[in-house]
Length: 282
Image (cartoon, rainbow, N blue to C red; front, side):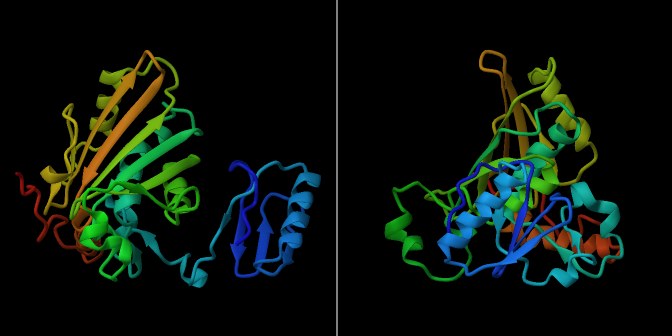
């Protein structure tokens, strides 16, 4: 895919095979182009500029768009009521779960600016799945720390609608077997301080069986083997940044455990049935 040299905001172009659609462009227009046709992409950029837009986002098409209307996003902390009786659930993976749980209460509560949000997240090797890869061999991962999916990671368009803001998401591969640690940055609005940020998280997740809010910095090992997400927050009054951290086990709350949690809710079973809450630490 040719890179379109625009920053992301305001306008969404949904890339569907060889077709793009410009939302909010009066009478909606669409053009069919060759995926590697650079001249066509230049024409698109001119069309966007002529229409008064300055930005565009380009993402891969969904493989089964006809099912989107029936599916429930499987993050129980935000969609518990929709999950009851659901027949089709799309459970989010580890990166979206960590980022959304960390940021959604602040964006939805209007306590941070809905732009300029940064998510830096690190995952263990198991976060890449079971398929073999040269970059996942022990000799490649051990004693290394790398970023990947720069600017175009597929989880970005999953995170943004749930958080309700534009997000710069950068994933990293860490030399560990399992675990996710997401460090999220946003600009506070008003007089938010650390005590207020922690209180907001505690209020948002009060009574949630698998979310732990604490003033301690989260540890991936403390969540290993559990279905829990550990959260904390700080407001740096000197630099004007809110920092929210979330740690979880990518194989449990970020994968199979979350699926079981959603299935329990969909089937009317106790939500925590069969799910551990204590991590295997140390």
